[in-house]
Image (cartoon, rainbow, N blue to C red; front, side, top):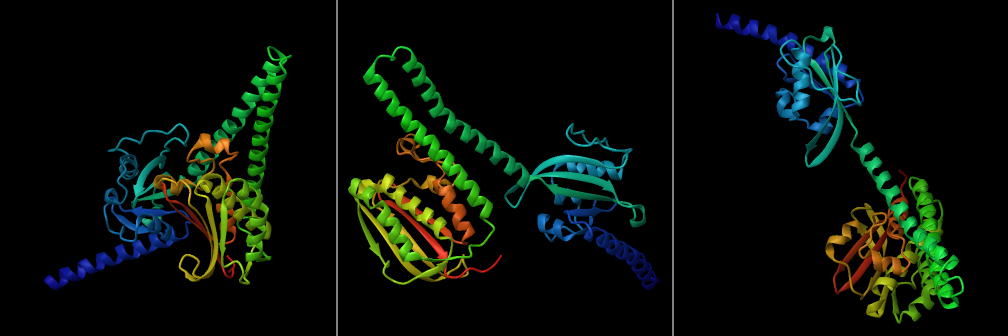
Length: 383
């Protein structure tokens, strides 16, 4: 008798496994993360995108342990039992819950990452049995992009409005109280010229950043003489170094090194980094520019060449280092504006190096100077 009971259980298990395979086959054709639950709200199938997002151990688990979000759990319960569960609250920006399905937005964390998703819960197609499907559209990247766009527009508006407001004020003063004051007129015109120059630099950097980002996915097709390029940059900036009382020391610039790259863009990278070292690290009176081969750089997965630009200035506090390449981020906004900085230089450097599959390392301590190291691959691979 026990043997007959075991055979009956085995016969009942076969259709269940067959049905799970059919559900899995159905989900595999969906490009979005999607999973299916049975009438007991237990996960019976999940496609590869869902497992990539939620983990590979989600099968045969209660749905509530897979996605711990009250609104999503309520939507699943409502689809499985419309009569016994209230419909989820409607989102005015999404389609209202229909007779058979619900769409809602939810924010939850998976492995420390915050995800904003559009979730649609619907019944399983009738031939696949009783249950529900849960499909997720990750809107996090789009939301982050929109937030970055808003921040960018706000920053540009602020950066342009400040000098424009000052210039308008000076113009009004020159037309009024200072109309016949020669000394005030000359002083105001000097300030206006300086502010106009800052706006011009900002617009130039914005255009440059736009061009760099447009080309970021296209690999450079040319070749550069890296020591020659560095020597040219240093020769161009020699008068500025002399005026700042900075002695420039070089190491390794006499060796022949040719790398794949865009000469104009790499010139922009090193000119920006050396100018920054002279502006903000010139108080140390010394600047070191060194070129050395890196036999194997793990991030580049191969050999490369490192250009180190090191100053002995005031240095940068550690909490600022991760954000230095963000657009418009400044350690000292007032000082940066006085020095003519736009807050875009290191962002441009980052995008140029991304195009070259290079890396930028920043090391600094307050009172001990700063070291910026550019690592460029010895050869470029496609992709």
